Length: 597
Image 1 (cartoon, one colour):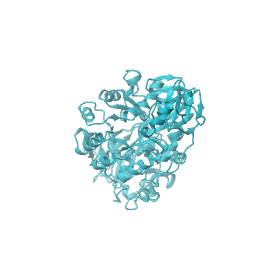
Image 2: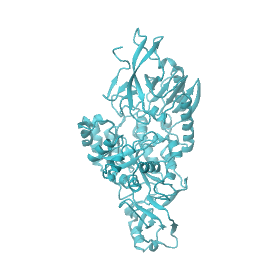
Image 3: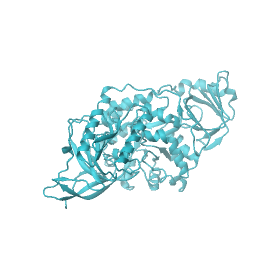
Image 4: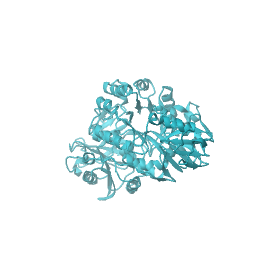
């Protein structure tokens, strides 16, 4: 059981006694307007809490008050603590403790997290570390066992691989709630034995299989994927995607993260088409520290859904009871009803949703935007802090792209970045050759993937467009979904080498170089993915990094997210991996140059 959580069975006698008036509650909240997400109505009801759970919820809780009972008199709305149905803590560049500390003041009291980023770097040990720190927190952080490391076998090499045996083992851990997003959708469609074994182990344990179907094909392939067992999907970007998922018995998870804006385009399935909203869930997927510090977390998503025309009570259901029900936790959390964990927010307005007071497990954890509890840290070992193994000091020569013999120009395949979206475009460009090496030109600059798990010294080179970089610059990051090698983008090979070696020196993170000088650094010493510093500090460093990208000519919104996804070989159309350029529409490696030039 998690830190500070007593099971219902342990406290049932006390809950019954408090509800019946035979014993006083620990806390009574009276006078408020209770948002009942079970019935979708607002009631002038009181709430009594005992042992961290709701005991009485009804018109008058005066029979639950004793001399030691803490009283909160309020006119505010009472809403359940907000739940994030699908997210990756590592995307905030924070550990679970610091992520929790950042989101608690925003009213998030439950998260369903998939630590597949650290799984790619440290394997099952890394998942265990995330799981253990998650259980130490004063809010509910459930862990989904990562399913796909590598995300696409044969197209990339990870630091560790996750096996069906690993999945079966993890299903017995106390905080594991299910299987993380099944990104290898071609594997499922083709009945890959390992993918099906992982999902079977999850179902055998009575837990939920997370989905990830990043293909526009809603025909037979989609049907095959759903038949494979995935219970939800967050990769939809259009109304038709949301409709297809719920019609096939999946939950449609609509995300608003730092770079994903997929709520507005899908919520019309509810607001205009009138589909049953109980099969829709709101989530963030990926939120950077700056978003958490400056804009919020699930409160931001709910506000956005309301701004898109969703009824506030329905939007709240999508961030509370719908999520809890999906993971089999409807009796444990997600609503202000007897027996559930006493996770409740006081807010003065259901549309703008100011988070005035946050209570988790019956204890005040934040008020007026300030956290009031400790979020304990795990003792991360040296093995988690020494993960950048390049094998050598790289040089400018490692980033040279030799042209085919005798060519003055080449027609190169180019990864095209799309603003605010995960998919890329497979583009081509006529590029000049100078001294036998292909040069970037105009908006096309170089991209490289530097292997950093097994110290091979390998560098894979290619081309990317869409960032708008100019002048002499380079940017490198050890956050490189999902295999998390090192992605380097630049206009100058010498700068690309400087940036790469810098990350080897600091143990991982993000660095931006311009005219031979480092102009921004975000150190991420844990697995090259996370910092155990506070969110505001990490956000400030990340903010400097974003400004540095702009100084190098970048105009994209949240371009760092786009940078970090350039090796994500499960989302179309074109990506880079340690094995080469990947055509994700065909799930196969492809040549850098067109044959017919």
